[in-house]
Length: 38
Image (cartoon, rainbow, N blue to C red; front, side, top):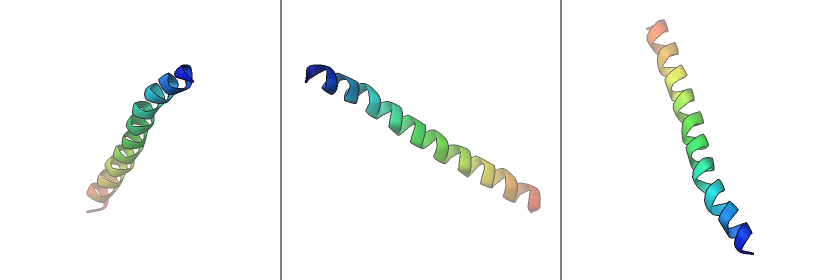
């Protein structure tokens, strides 16, 4: 039970970071795409 809680505590920030990373990458690529076409 305790081990499960520990892994969840470790996993959650990782998931948040990876989600933000993916979002930032898409935003950045969109920005670059629009700046090229403009």
